[in-house]
Amino acid sequence: MPMRSAIPMSLAAVAAGLALAGPARATVSISCTDMKFESSLDIVLGAGPVPNVFSVSLSVGGRDFTTAEGLPGEKLDIAQAYDDGEIFRIDLVDPQVTRRVAAIRLIRGEHDEAPLQIGLVQIEDEPPVGISCTGP
Image (cartoon, rainbow, N blue to C red):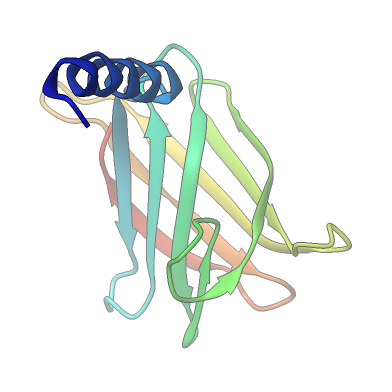
């Protein structure tokens, strides 16, 4: 192939690739654990004025759950996420959306230097686990 025709084709391929690329996403995260460090919760949020939950990964009672593709754990889907400024609620359901598997409730408090978040994670009918969190 002559060099002259290879350059325009390469530029066309790069332009097509840029057109297909998605927008960059700014994210923040909330990380939580219980007092004994036996349970953990990680929430990835899109930055913005309302909670846009990208993914949730949690480990409670020896079971691992995730909403993210490719991560280890039982696959769950986000049924709803609601933040009224005081309480942040996330409900996770099984992939068939037949039952709520996990309920996450975080109570938010304000502090001069860092926000305070405490709450609970409940898996199905198990007793809730108290957690404390760091993050926005």
